[in-house]
Length: 407
Image (cartoon, rainbow, N blue to C red; front, side, top):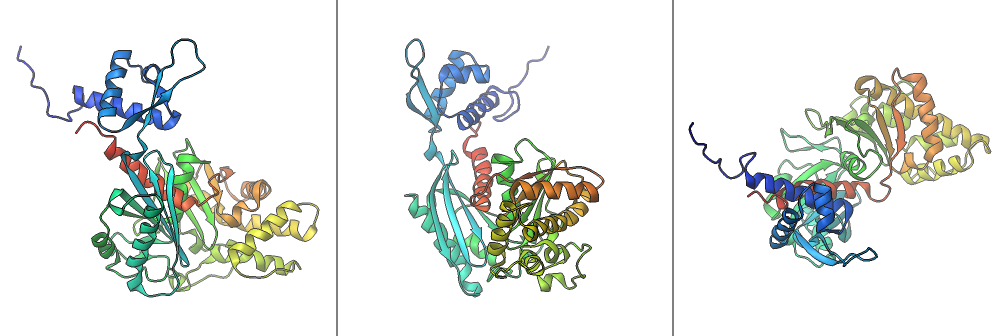
């Protein structure tokens, strides 16, 4: 019988790959559970005590775990605890809109260690690279780091960068971000890998990893703040479409509003006009509710909060909530007919303000308008969800690199 030749490094089934798989499993457990003892890691991974000890020694030598205190309150001697070395890597995320850029830095455990907000007035395209760098540097400085310490940057913007042309589409309201050379300029200026993602898609990433969509491989997230959009997650992956425009449901023609033509130029569409934040103060005015009209998102959130608090006590505010729920359900019925999702997450300030009452009303309306019955839930990531999603996206890729001990 001929002998076998060991495979090259990284070949599946070799001791090196098996060790790397155990290393990654242990690191993921430490991220999930916090500090663990050698014995506890052994039990959770199914490894023997000697193998768990070798694993921890290997990870400690690689700078991926550190000893941190001892267990207390249990019979017997206190056990040494280990945790992921937070300084093994850092990532950054940016949330961009027409008025400001918010930047944050997180360590490899996901803890935010630096934050900075930069106002971005004006429409000059030549300022964008400088603004991105200034926002990033502000967060890096707040974290006590340098730009070179950041392993990866994820930037969230409205719209999407067309993979064919590199131009930002579906976001004509974002000043200065439409130059065809912008991505090349940013890549040349910044020392770390840079990725770009639609802002609503990043909210879906945050909800899937940390919030209301945990454990779900297929769901739709409806977002409503300054604009109305959706994120589509199919088989655990974001569906972006041919030009990145999948989920731009604000452009969806719907009954109840006149057809909007030249939607890209108008930066609006039927569903946006019917159920976007700007529709809420208009509804309120028609119902005799005295309210300012702008800023749309803030006014809409305040009105919907009042309406939820006064539901079935104030006739006009109750009707406002019911009519708005019907409008949202009208667009969601079309989305449901095409995608048939099992779960719809309602997110964004203008939707979340209505809370459980608005969710329940939309659910009831959707049952009348759609053939299937998706479950509706309110999003759980209520603080800077775009930024949180950007950090989570950056962390996922960075951990895959930094935690890979097979190389």
